[in-house]
Each structure stands twice: as structure tokens, then as C-alpha cells.
Length: 542
Image (cartoon, rainbow, N blue to C red; front, side, top):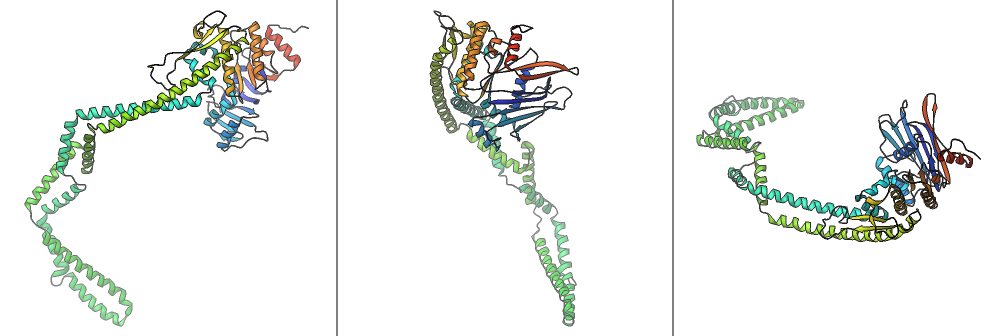
């Protein structure tokens, strides 16, 4: 139940507090006084998008705070899942939203920073708002199915239906994509086969271009490399007076010195290491020089191979490794050409998806027909209580045989109405007057309300197109609704306002040259004055 609504610095509201009670609450006031701003603020509090100019001129930010008491169990579960503690001992919920100039907002739930997704989850369990033009939706036949689903509480079945339909669409798209790939690949299969053959014939190996390049350098410069490495080997190792021989003599002298002073041992070890490395280097140089050959045939083969690799890289782009990857991709693509096994599997998946979608469409259709039957009976009594005695309401379904399955199943349905006894029901969208539409929508919403017993029902100017005796029966219906739940109604009709247990009036005044909206609960005598004003009187008389 919505207990308190506080608004600060929004539109023409400076600071305002509205306290509501159980049962039927009405909000009245002159046009432009700020009634719609209250509903807009309440919408923003529970995750609605604020208008860019909603914050009061001259203020840095505005705020709206809503206090709910006796919150439904589903709300407590959502709060627990979000890690937000309950407020107070009675399970209260305080939702606060701060709106900065420009539209940026911050949300708080029971004092903790909250998210918009959480507010959107909480909203339908706390409030159900029925707008002043909502009855006009009945003139759109496509809205009738949505209303029936809402009244019947078919949301979970509808979600399953949409999931199965999405899977069916995805399966069909995957098969179409695979068939398109197959057809495109078939058209280019000759080209692909020629490219694959060329790359396979090349017998490419990763890293070979770098290795061949190094080998080519050795072959081209073999004679000079042999001369240089032979000279280096002789100077370091094999010639008389070579580096190794000099190091050997130095090592002999150092060993004699070490016998006199053991502190020279580390130096002697360094010389031993140097001598060993020089000897090893000399042997390696000799082996390298002896291995060099002036092989013109091998040089020709290496250059021919390098030329082939360069040509393939120019043709296909990338490195040798990229060419190897391309070869593998071509092999895979060609293997898929004419691969009927995959296509058969995808076709089988479509059959299964169609079976599942058909089953859920059938379930949904059965549920809708059950709800339609119950609604038809309930609406007869509801309409009679709304000054439509003798009116008959019906739900008619179109033929489903051969109809494609959509995300909402295969049903086409429409509401029909016989407003007077003896008449045949006709299309509600075409024959109902504005006043009849208002009452029919109220009756439908009364049926839908049974699905959300914990939420406050808000009717924004439900009196559109009605007056007189009809307004009285609408007021009685709202009062009846208020016996089992909290109802908030914004109205211009005194015949509706008179049935409220709690009456709030919104007024607009001027303070220091600026318009300011205010709201206050009315006493019994003040209610009489407000009802008189609504009747058109400027002065209340005894």
C-alpha cells in the first residue's frame, strides 16, 4: 500500500507531501493544479524516465520519495535477492529517486543505492496505473489479446511460447544460412579447388622462408665465409703461436705462481675456462669451414623455392603461416560443399522446434479459451454493475488452422459487445461509445486486478466520457474495489469523488511571483466545499 508520497522541486511543486489511506483515495483539483505531476513523480520513483525539464527551474535537483507499507511477499523476495534489508518492523519499503537538471538520476531503496532494473522489477508488484486514455486501446483489436493474457495471468505461458518461437526462428535462420553458404561455396568450388591444389602442391612449412633466406646467404658467400672462418680458426687454435698456445703458456706460469700464493687460484680458473672456450671455438670454426660447399645447384633450388613463396604471398597475401592457414580453411570449405549431413541435422532441428512451438501454441490457445469463457461470464455481472444492464460481452477467436505460429502463438481474437438486450454482439472496437469503452475497460481492469492483489490500483481520470448515473455506478465500483485493496483515483467528477474514504485536493497558488502546487487531505466539511466546487458552484450554500 502506498502510504506517503513526497515530492520536492519538480515542475511547479516546491515541496509537497501526500498521505494516503487504505480503500478508495481520490485526488481532485482544478486543471493545471499539478495532479498529473504527482502521478508522473510516482512513475519516476519506480523507474520511469523523467522529462528533461522536470526539475523545477532554479533548483539543482529534484526528488521524489514513496513509502509503501504492508508490501507483498514478492517484493520482500526481490529485496532479499538484491541484498537490501527491510525497513522498520512492519516490512516497509522506501523508494527515493533524485533527479538532477538534465535528467541524470540516482535511486535509493530503503536507504541503499538501487538500480533501475530493480525498480522496474518492483513496480508491477506495488502499483498498477491505468491511464486516462487507456480505454481507447479497446479500439485497437490487436490490444484485445494482450488484455486477455493479462487478465488470465498467462505471462509465464506466453514467455514459454515466445522462447519456443525464438528457437524456431533461430533454427530456420541457421538452416537458411547453411544453405546459402553451401550454394555460394558450390558456385566457387572450382576456384577454391584450384587454390587448394596450388597451396597443397607447394607443401608449405612454417618458418621455411626464414630458414631458406639464411641458407641462401651462406651459399652466395660460401667462398668468403670459408676464408674468414679458416683464418679465425688458425689464429685462435691451430697455427703456431695461436691464441690457445699463448693461453697455455700463461696458464703454466700461473700454476707455478699459485703454488707460492694460493690466492691466485680464481685467476688460474679463469684462464682455464678461457683456454677451453678458445679451443672449443677453434674446433667449431674448423668444422664450419669444412662444411661449406660451393653448391650452385643447391643455390638455384633455394632461390627457386624462395621465388615460389614470394609469388604465393603476393597472390594470396600474408606470410607463409597465413598461407598454411588459408590452405586449411579452403580444405574445410570444400569439405562443406554438398555436406548434406549437416543440412539434414539442421532440418531435423527445425522439425523439433516446430513441434515444441506448436505444442506451446496449443497450450496457450487452450488457456486463452478457458480465460475467455470465464471472462465472458464475469463481464456480464461487471457490466450490469456499471449501468450496462442486459449488455453481453463475448470473445471470438479466428480460425487457427493453417495460421503461422508467431511469438504470441497462433490465436487471433477480438472482443464483441451487445450493448442492449436483443442485439447481436458486434465488434467492440467499432460500435462502443466513449462512455461504454470507459466502463468496459474498468470492468476488464477489475478482472485483471485479481492477478495483483498486493498492488495499489491507480486510475487516472477513469471518468472520461461518462457522467450522471453512470459516474455514480463507476464510483461505486471503485469503492467496491477499495474494500479489498488500496485504490487511488484522479477524477474531475464529484459523483466519483463522493465515494472516496479519503480525499486529497491539489491546488495551485502564487508565492513570490512563482506558481506553486500544494496538496492536502480534506476534512468532512472541506470535502463538501470541494465537491460543490466540482459541481460548478463558486459558493457553498447551506
